Length: 177
Image 1: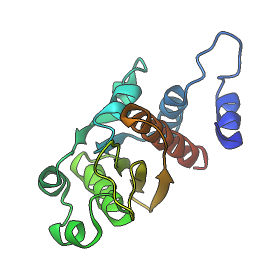
Image 2 (image 1 turned 120 degrees about the horizontal axis):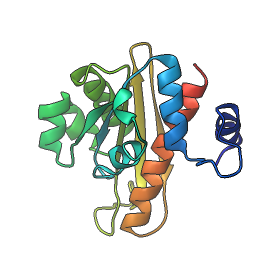
Image 3 (image 1 turned 90 degrees about the horizontal axis):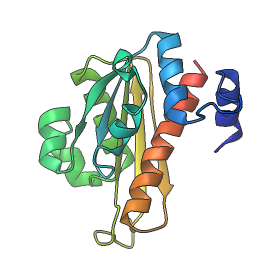
Image 4 (image 1 turned 90 degrees about the vertical axis):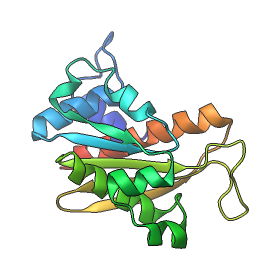
């Protein structure tokens, strides 16, 4: 957990003994405070981010929903990702997660779109994009960003790390608004 996230947890009342100190709760509180709603486009995490967000009671106040777009066809049909971009950069790339984040934000009429695409393994990796390669994207009506990660572990571990990091990046973004 980063120092910024620890600070956000403390600032938002999650530093008292016995209180649940999870990033999902912080995200919920921040989204409510900011009057924002979010949506998610997940590929390698297979719905895990949505699962974690909806573990928070009352998350329907700020979580509109998401798409699990595992296949490239789903990315194109549901999110408006361009075939040309997929062919040029591959599904696990900065450009694709940016298109996914904008596509889900637009499709769901959300304030924030969060996306993730990666190679969970054990197969599918290449020398250029080994297993664990993951991109996480975030898009708002004002701006967007994407971050690259190289996670280590088995398939479930990579998925969990990707989901947790996506939530952490979202919390840090919201905490700076």
